[in-house]
Length: 260
Ligand code: NAD
Image 1 (cartoon, helix red, strand yellow):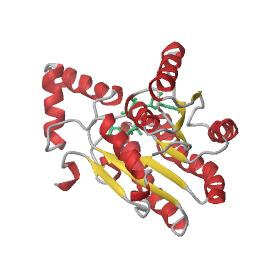
Image 2 (cartoon, helix red, strand yellow):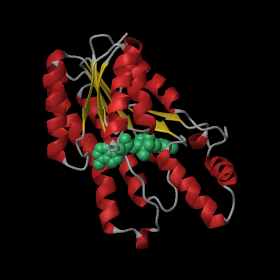
Image 3 (cartoon, helix red, strand yellow):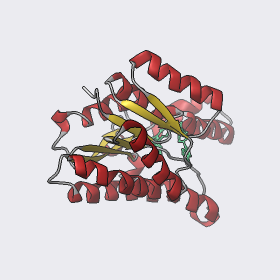
């Protein structure tokens, strides 16, 4: 379905981003991976995508907290592939603390990676998408883009910002063949969430397995983690023609979290 299309997935060396990158590749898209990590492991993932799906896969080490590196990543993908048809703004980090204890440096970095990078990436891909009158911008927000939790000031502010920015971009491209939507996952078992499970286990002196059940029970009525594969399949659907008139939506995939 996506043969001949090209996609950048930010933060795709791990977790949700990697799941989405592999699903887009399985649908036929050439992929630019991005994110941090062990160079040999990233190269193995890149080669696996090419071998498993017969597409071209590239890697950019661009730091999403740096606007000039975001622009350079988009330019290099456009040059290598000829175009950037799909941008998945996924890179994100977390830090938990009460507002009065929240380190200013963590606030600035989370806003830069989780929110401002979405703006800069979108700004860089839109001219090409407009010229070709086709594009898909998929922002990985969060249930925390729709509701809040204590101790997540920067993350919740950034994700609410992403939901708002998604609507603006959808309106500005409404009459074109471009769509911009947000996916709002609840808990997904990735390294980002494993850290929070480990911290909960330590704080409450319970096992990691008990902490996992507790974390799910507090927020996610299904008591099941959403999987990166499920999010990848939703991203592929959003790239389809069937989804061509879904514009500015924020789609919860949260086991009922935000239905409460
Ligand atoms: P993860 O920690 O597994 O992956 C994060 C990715 O972002 C990694 O590839 C990492 O290298 C990359 N990254 C971090 N800082 C970067 C930077 N400065 N520049 C470039 N890449 C950078 O986390 P995840 O759980 O897969 O999260 C992915 C996205 O999904 C995030 O935006 C997160 O907020 C969102 N999300 C996650 C959950 C969840 O439960 N895991 C729920 C809702 C939303």
